[in-house]
Length: 161
Image 1 (cartoon, rainbow, N blue to C red):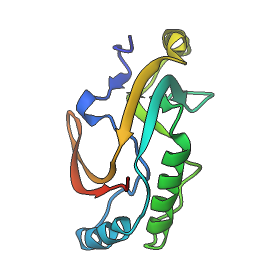
Image 2: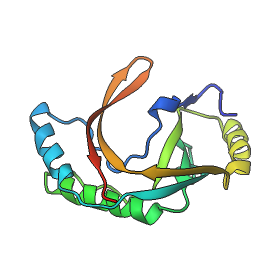
Image 3: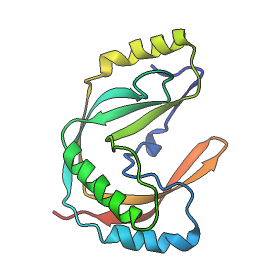
Image 4: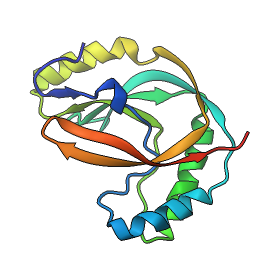
């Protein structure tokens, strides 16, 4: 569907929900981050993955994503706790959290190509992709390579029952 010039599909193993993007982090700060994230208390929850959309809503499309229907409140609360913990360590507060997983990144499209992409994804705007159990959240490291980023878990933080 989205396999065309100007669009980079995210590999299946790299698809994830980002609670907070930290950017470049000095090695000396990783233990502080792990400690702060380890103090977060939250319950496990179920997430209903549903619908395809894009950012930004007007102008040039940069990201194509799958969204969250049910479980969004729980995910937003967890993201808020992560945001608060990282703010105490000096990380900049992000804009409003929107629960989503990026499935494609868009480099550049002509207005005609943009229209084609919007027409292709519109039928999936309410597509049901199923449920998932969220039992943990992870601190991830992103290593950039010529073929794209490689994500690895630095630490896994369990959620309560």
